[in-house]
Image 1: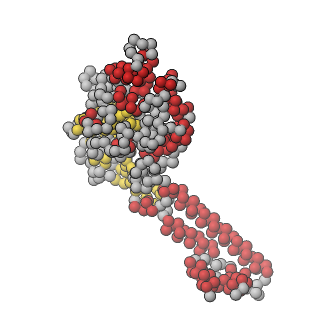
Image 2: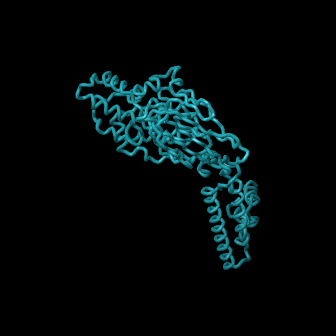
Image 3: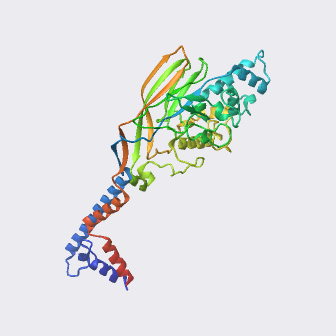
Length: 435
């Protein structure tokens, strides 16, 4: 069977507009040119429309709609992480003598005291404060996190044991519930947290979960407020982070609220919860098109679950290892990676390592918290932090407006409109070749 015979038969039996006229023998050559032009034009417009539909599917397959939240009672209370520059003078003196054999009357004593003060309040945004201690050989092999734990020995145990959770602080909320805060090493330093991912912020060198209060779920018929007693002296500065309780705290993140206060004052924070849900069809879209993930769609190597915060943590660890060949002690995961010393931390600061772009999409179904009102005043009595949570009457819902099956239908419609081709046309070509 010759190629000419096959071509003539396909053109003759095809339902594509104008194709049979190309092989019609009695047709004038000018008419044949006309039908060629018609076919080329129809092919161009059908391809152009298909490309437009493909671009729409890639860029805008989802719209955001509003839905009522009345009757729902499963809104999780905010995660709270508290950090401070608390210090114990006795611990400072003891560590200086143990590590450098320097006594209070020695000339170097003040130098090492200043170093411990800087380390005690070190966080991701003030690494430059280590500059005076660059190239100091006496600090080269110092394990910064171990020193930090020893500085906070009265607040946290220095190693993992059964008393860790008892020493981490029992704080009482307005409904007389005890909130158990777990020790956590974060980009904000050594903190206490209610995050349910305490495994990934465990400061004791092992990726095991620490005891922490269970998540409180709020409804419209009950108050969701917490009263926190910081339990530190009046000279201490406190940083309180509000974040998703199912994620780790990431200072500077757009979904993290930060407020700094003095321990001799009272603070009232009024929050508004915002919720985003997704209909079931969203999961069927490719991740690169819906631009969000579900927790079980994990691609991270250091974490067993996907969350935006842990994703950014992994991104920053990889960036630190790439730029300065070490990771800061702020991260408990990747324990096999070399830990930065003072020079390594300054290297990260010079390289602006936190500015590394991270491809961390949000969750398809997520909860965020927005600061509505804040009231701060000096108190002559015990310092308190009150966090009040207001629930929304409306929530945002991700809805699919252009799914994969709709994309296939739009392709078929465009090709059928301009060319008259269909599945039957393709089957007919296959049938001819099969004979």
